[in-house]
Image (cartoon, rainbow over the protein chains, first blue to last red):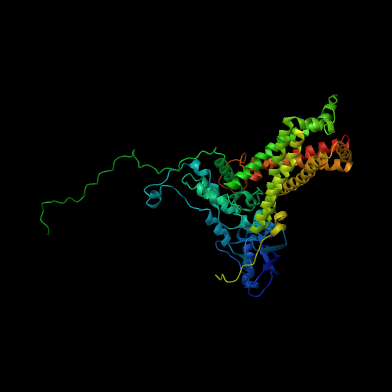
Length: 281
Length: 120
Length: 148
């Protein structure tokens, strides 16, 4: 499509109002699409011009907040990150993210996602709590140690991996790919010492062992976080621990105070000399 | 750490089955294999060779091990499939216990028959 | 936020567990892994029953059972079980290696276009599947040219 051209694309959007409807239904809208329009632009056009009761979440429109995840043509995407042209279809079917409870129209309840994320304790845990409560210096971590988990810190908690996961389709209590990948991010962080506590959550009936490496989560992730890779590395950690071949190291120490720097410069001389014996006034 | 041990046992029994079942398959088809080389061997599924095998301790041990590995690996896999499909914890408990009982019964039946015949 | 109304369930369910419409090939390889596993379990149960029930009844029953089992339909069933075992063991080997994270490279900061670790290893995965298909063809040839 040239920059000036405009095409009519049909948007089939799933609607559901819990106060009036008993089941969801599909509404059709015709949207004029120009070069460079994203699906989010199309939905905003619908909301502004065609049907202002259409509800969806959106915030940053640049794929960093993770609000606008939806099922677009049967694949979970971020609406702000998906150009209408790249779908190569004249009809777009937009449905809310599956495997999460539906509130209204395209809005899903992300509370299960956040609860499972919270359950794996996504914060640095150390035994020396004195340092955590009253920090004196930074923890030392080399760039190589950072590279081992940096990729998994880019998660924006959008919930798309949960929608893509085949195990989440039937197992409601399964710890999501997102929670498992974040669990690895904290276990692999050299500053952290809480692996043993987190393994209690992973080893449960619906924990990590229901993941069977379908890889759909990594394929759908809009930020390239690759949660499947994190989950397999986490399995390796777990197996190494129970087979007693793990190299359990101490968490990263605090950076010691510098001993090699120059001594402090002396206080500079006053440019205006004051005679200590002179009388005031 | 129970589930981790069970999953690791699934891996380990898988590898062990590959080895012991390989031995079993090769022995069962040794006559066809050796026929290519021109050597004649008696049919291993015949009554005589089977009775001879059941008198040797090594075969009894091999078959008992193979039976136990296969039962664990297959029944754990079956239980996982059922447990992943239902959210109800009651159904999960019932399937787990019935599979454990089934496994014990099958192992007892499968191993007592050759052991009885070994002593005969 | 009104919590009084229960949220509508939005799960894909069993259909989504089998065919989500957008899973990559590794999921279907795993579904086939489970199906072959169940097939081998079924065969194992029948095999256990045959080798125990018919054995304790004496030589005549055993020999007649063996003669019955040389029927072409049973031979075809055995052929299917051999295929299932070949695929299940090769895929199982791949799963052991990949699920423990060996050979998948190192985590690298994501640069667009994102290539996840499974996509990078897809050539190895398809090689293993190809070997299983080759073994299947070999056994098919052996089955068709008689001797079973």
